[in-house]
Image (tube, rainbow, N blue to C red; front, top):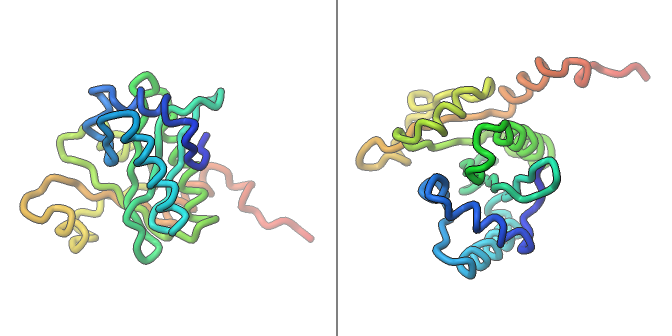
Length: 183
């Protein structure tokens, strides 16, 4: 479902990213294939330095269909950035990728919180976030961060996923996986 970023996936990902339905919502925009290749190489290097975490989202046949990233990592928290190619919208890939990514972040990489800043006019992303049972609106509870991302005027809503919320969600989905095994 997800894998570490690889330059071999760049051609397919670039073709998906430049679609007008996707491009405006991508954080790391590239206006040419060469620029996308360069940005991907920089992303891989930034992950090696611990500045971000980036994965390629795959379909069930292992084809690259988008990316999921944790940017601006600070004090075991960061900002989520994700996009899928238009042919894969509305097919459940986003939720599967997030579940896999959050499992890795929270249980393997010691991340405690993930934030999402979603443009107020980005209705599709807002509805997708609101569907996730482990996400909470943090405009009021994290007022400092909300004000930081909306310096002059309110452009973004702030959502938050905490490790505890995600763990509770997972427990409710598969309680048998959390039962203590007798020695």
